Image 1 (cartoon, rainbow, N blue to C red):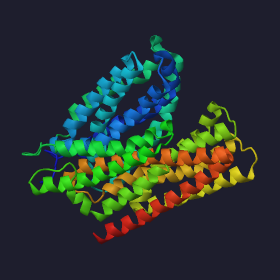
Image 2 (image 1 turned 45 degrees about the horizontal axis):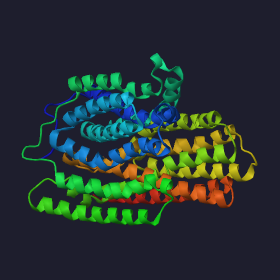
Image 3 (image 1 turned 60 degrees about the vertical axis):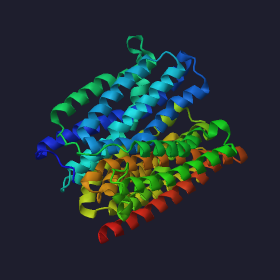
Image 4 (image 1 turned 180 degrees about the vertical axis):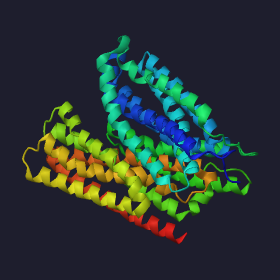
Length: 470
């Protein structure tokens, strides 16, 4: 049974739907960055310990990453509109709770709930795009999605600093959470009126046992990556991750058992037979391994190695963000003419940008923020060419009935990639910095980024071959 909208939706109205769902994606993206800016103020106001402050960020990522597949599957079962509304309203309510928190522990619990509601909301964004844009407008729609991803990060840093500085009505850091309340209510109201309804799949229900097992497996896998640095990467973390892998293997066997019993598995098992989709997930994993970790290493090198002040270091990323947005705009038109080749071109440009950065770092004794910013433009443009159309390319061969499940798997893959990259490459940078220098750590990190992007390129090439043969 294929998931279809109950009545045809005209081309004008579906662009309004696009605006609604990407607005939710924008709110989610801004929230992920805005909190980082407010963290120092939160720590002072709530008298929070360092471990509590780190948990405010990590627990949100863990809740989202471990539950996003479940959120996507709920969309398949109950309809993307229904779960999207539940997710948006839940995200709005938990944002209000975060803003009202009176202690570090309460804020951690509220952030856990916020991440869980985000896991309901966000998978419906990609699923909705996949369902409504099946014609030549698909690349343009996913280009808009990519632009929003780029703008969300820049807006999060800017808005966070602005709100904390303005201290509106004496709310201080709390305003970074309160801002989600009017935005969330507006998005929910618009979605209620405009989004097309999708009928519930009769006789289906959530695979609760599978959800619990997947949550446990991903928690064991992701948790050590996020908290490993704080506990000195003790050997038992590796054992926990091995247990996580074993649980995930058991999860796949469990899902096959659910399917044989006539139930609806948490993940659509047909996706495991979709070679193009699986190779696309591989490309996404290696792309995101070099995503957040790049910004971490770049920031550390500028501030610790070159002693560039935080404000100047932050401003150095602005040209990159602009290049990312411009590339996202260009990627839609380029993808229409060149297909997934644009993704490979973007990877080549990222590698070229990393090469220029290496030359600047190696040949110039004290690179200025401007010199680094100009070099990062190349990387940012290449990253925009990849990130904007990547999700659409990975989901291209997915059947509409599995759109939510596939979107959830994509989201989980991206989050695991981000977490693993920050943990692994961050650890490499710190280790080499302590043995030699921040410059040496930066150059080795750049070499690792080049390697990861080359592997991503290989997966993209394999994905194209699988798509062409299907």
